[in-house]
Image (cartoon, rainbow, N blue to C red; front, side):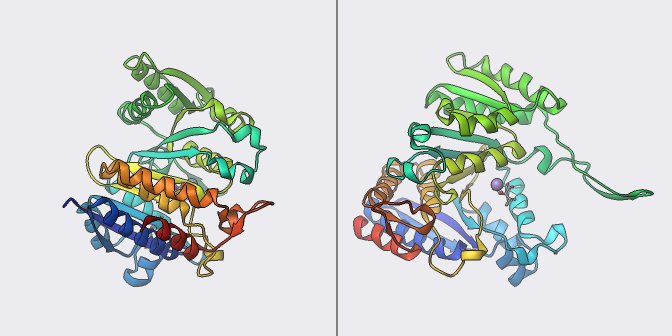
Length: 359
Ligand code: IPM
Ligand code: MN
């Protein structure tokens, strides 16, 4: 029997609750589709600060490296806000991304028809939305040097560096074009080339790569315009290719088109090596432990893992369809409630409803 090793990182806040649901469902899916999943839970984020005094312990990183895929829930809690930067949960996440060289962050945004009323935009604007944000994840201003804070005579100065090399741009652009080739054949590259040198290089390299993909239509938008277009006419987009910081911001905007950031999965991939599959949302400490969190983004991340990391396409599609079924039946966590016929349920209940269908 085929067998896959998954490192589970439940993290903080709502992380452990949505992980429990996801792990149970994955187990049932593996039985149904005849493969084995071996889970190993490791400390990460705030929970690792508690147990090991650092957000990404060495043993956690080793487990991740030795697995076929990493499934991450969410990390972070305001109670760590005052720790020095190297000790904060987010620093652990950035270190995980760079240590595994996860340069390609894929964030699909597709409207589930039964949820089009939950969107903060009018239904007619979001009905057709089916886009993917391809965000560069291991360079740009998140990692650029020099960075820091220095004291000057007139007070402090703080700085970060937005940097990309040709190679870094080329490898993420290639991912975007290959993805577009399997979709609607369109790449929109988002930059700020009217102001930033780094964006000028981004644009030039993207155009060069597009020469190898003649059938794909390449367009460019400045990031401010792209933010506006995402709420003005989001169905114009197929693949959005962009840098680390712009992708961070645009993917949150895009997430809201689906009604809730609690719906959006992601995959962070490298050339060869394990990928990290995680919801786009955060750890939502304010609702942790109340059984009201929406586990769907993590479940959809698990479906991406089945398809992308394990090539178990039938199992991944089946999981996605089963989620659609319970949504069609009107079940919603509180973040998705709209007027009408929805039936409000908690996190565990979503798991139970899915389990009934899968068995
Ligand atoms: C994301 C998150 C992270 C990021 C934070 C938690 C460091 O917002 O994955 O989008 O900024 O990349
Ligand atoms: Mn973000």
